[in-house]
Image (cartoon, rainbow, N blue to C red; front, side, top):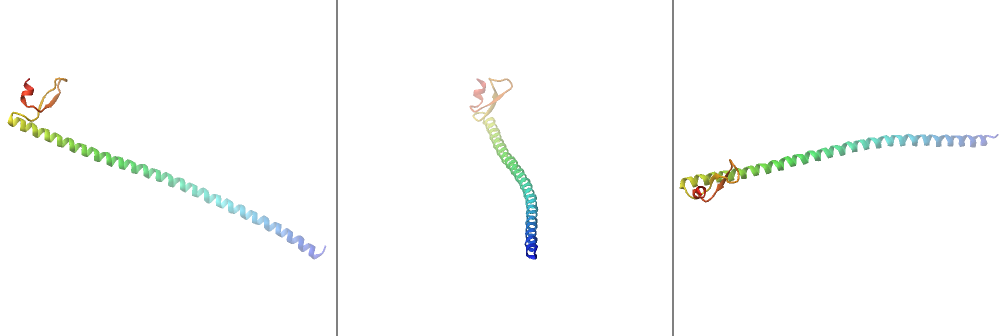
Length: 124
């Protein structure tokens, strides 16, 4: 064999080895990319969970705040109505006519109802 044949054979072997090395390097790169992708997927899953948790907490806070505000508003309205009714009772007692009075309910025992026609409606 001549040197040219040996050089050609050696260069063919070198090319084959270089191709195998490149294939191995590509496999290693793919493995690294898969690891990075898995890490990113885990990060994304944790991020989605935290976003959902924050949304739930926000909804709970909004619900608590809204219901609390509605309850406070309703309580103020009821308190104002009670104060108005008590003032009407006092006015009716002072005049002994008109105004609102608490009278026994005919429908239920131990129950009272407001009567707006004065003492005469209670006496009947």
